[in-house]
Image (spheres, rainbow, N blue to C red):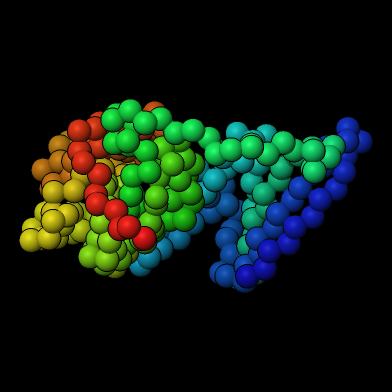
Length: 249
């Protein structure tokens, strides 16, 4: 795999930035390319069975790119690999050295309510790096200490290694999915057996929420994730809960 970055100044003074990610994989035909950015779609249906994933990664990535005034396009032929191109427009800083730096750290709220949610230790479990990045962006306002895992097996290992205040758990993952992971968490004799767990899933059919709550999830959020819903449920579950003990170090 190769990554190629170019920047070209336009007549408006803006810069056109292009980031090409080039692979040598199996490639795609025109029909597969036309469906690639559609939510819940993968070019090869066997991928989700072998490696997990729901087909949301590229759809979310394109949404993020377009929110920034750019786009993502793909060029691919069967047997010849694929090139994904992120296109963005940006303005050069007039004087990067003139950017004012804060003279002191931003003061954090000290009310009991704020202490319950700020700096919480969050275990984020999702096999898709784009999804994890989106959650990190949405959670940034709470200044969380986020540790990542890519499947349920890794999540259980992280829980054994250090204390957490809450788990954000994807449902469809390879190796061990979220359904098996929550069963093992709730059946454990460890102190974290009662930790709040929010299910993050593309399953949004009638009855899905009730099914996951019955498995032991504390709450449920369907993908694509809504930032306000995530914040509301995050605060609700942490409110009144004493944060896990911190090591002095």
